[in-house]
Length: 168
Image (cartoon, one colour):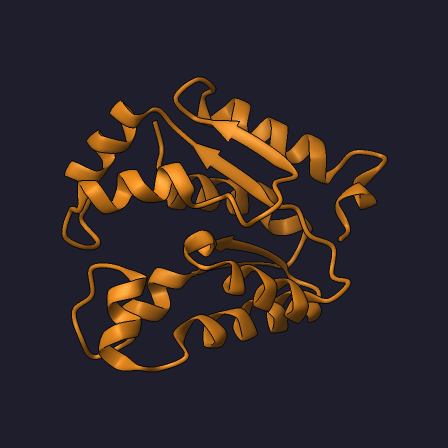
């Protein structure tokens, strides 16, 4: 099974010559800071910087410039974050995807993380609560479906005759 980041990368490679694409991750913003981090919330507390707002402004600028913007974001930590991002995107076409997996798969991924220290309790809480504030247009479970099937479902939604169905 592939992680969210690898799945986003695969999707970008498949449609790369057809559209302008940018992949943005809140983790990239966190890595650009001069401090070690283990979670968005911990980093916000340490830095007192508007990290989420900076990230959302970047996402909105990319999308409004016409790029297909693939966003890896644990946005549900705070419903205010959801409202902030959606307001910045205004009437930009949007397809939100809730990517889930079994707790066993999640624990395995968390134990083998290389981008930050493993934190099983944090990951388990996020998996349970993270999408509650964000309306999902598409729900995928990559414990059940392969990466290819997940991508096919995404492309089916993006390239359907009724592709504007997901405009907020």
